[in-house]
Image 1 (cartoon, helix red, strand yellow):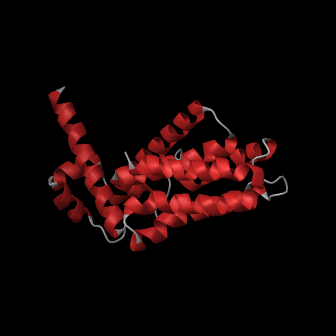
Image 2 (spheres, helix red, strand yellow):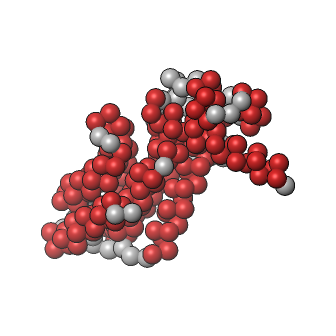
Image 3 (cartoon, helix red, strand yellow):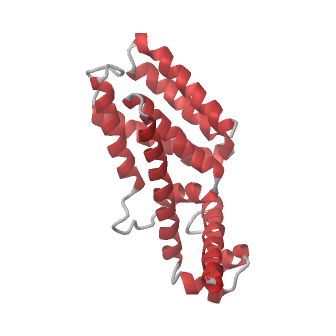
Length: 215
């Protein structure tokens, strides 16, 4: 039992070290030797758990996917309108990125040339499905204009959201991500939401940003 616990701890240490390096330097620029040194483990320990760098990347993407799905389950359990749920989901995923290197690395790997192995699905495909479903609900609830192109808005939202982190990686500290997500929503709300309902969602965007900054 003690040996198994040590093995699990070593595996977690390796994953965290790899995630930190992948996030800061990128997948291609990080070698297994870099990860061994950063994790302070032996090469034998690394190869015991991961046969190749790609296996490490996939493990990180799995953990990022699991964390994102947990955020979505928590959002769904709160109830609320479709648009509110969609907003909370984006801020929840942003919070994960602020709090730890594994979600940040998972997002960076998703934009790199790293194959996503089945049954794991590409996170952007899952986010597109979520955005489409919630926008359809928001139309029915009269929270967004009825004549919007759902597919175009869903793609724009996901690309906008991903871009806040991809571009921000070079321009902003990660702690500024909630502010960028709030700015994204302030722009989206003004284009999507009828005037009588805008104040509610503009206030919500600012509130969700504050909640992350105070955690």
